[in-house]
Image 1 (cartoon, one colour):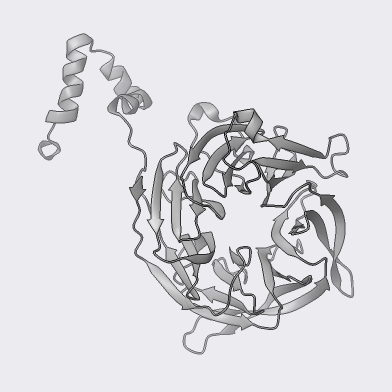
Image 2 (cartoon, helix red, strand yellow; image 1 turned 60 degrees about the horizontal axis):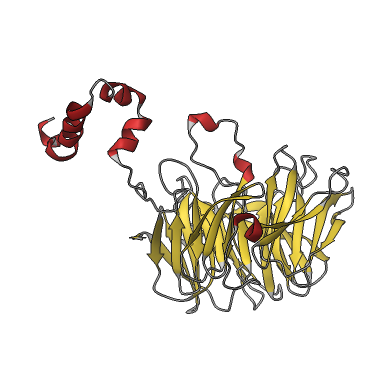
Length: 407
């Protein structure tokens, strides 16, 4: 296992405790910069931009989940904040205010809607579940219920309109949206014991069985130490493909992680590979941190140790050195007038927000010279001109005797 070291980081003070779904990265003010939003159990919402906190909103109850996206389907992102007792607060950037210390314009989110929905929200997801080009709000509750809503705008006001309700057999771990082999969107809901519930929208796809249990344990002959172990999922993983794989749909790839450290890469209903990292995992995400552009799996444990797994099962680990209560990874605009960069966000037990940014890793997988030759058509043709002892001598010279300083 490789050790990763990241240096660039910011620290912010953040009082109170934070639910793991109450941390989000996104463009809340629609200025093409990515901000960080964190809500705590005391009802305070904090918005961070670059190296400073730019706004605090209080009195929101016990904040359990946050999402950022175009909920109103108007081309502008909104901030959705849901409390444990079911109050859904929606914020929109109606105007930009000028900073008192710099000439930079900063976000000021304004409340545009408050609505009561069923209590005990655990996870939030924005996605087009019925393939109509409009985003819906998918809400997972602690009582094993999933509900979907759509924003409906009238001349006087708008509101969230309930669309669907599904009941799961067991506790919900996480909810992701993928596309099936025919390109139809569906929800995957992680369930205990490395199983998932696949859900189609019954109105958009009435010909399909809209609920199905997928049992990965039986399909892949997995040996679980705890058959009722909980799991997390992340979808739409960008695969590092060869040119021969152009017919593959990247949206079909997703990952599963059990809370005792078993990671799996999957496509449709099949497990491609599995890897045991021998640590407890409470968070799973994806992130591109190399020049190849392909996604790495990011798994985080409660002690702050973060595992970075490439698609060849090579593992690097980053140690924060402090226990955490929440974690998030994604893109963040660390400095003004710059592009967003990859980042890790840790919420520590000492009530701090630690943002590690602009993280880059070299190629985590070492390839043999033989593999490099196979992947290079021109070099492969050249090597094939040599046989037996001559080929062996050429490879030996390239590996051990060639001096790069003389070239």
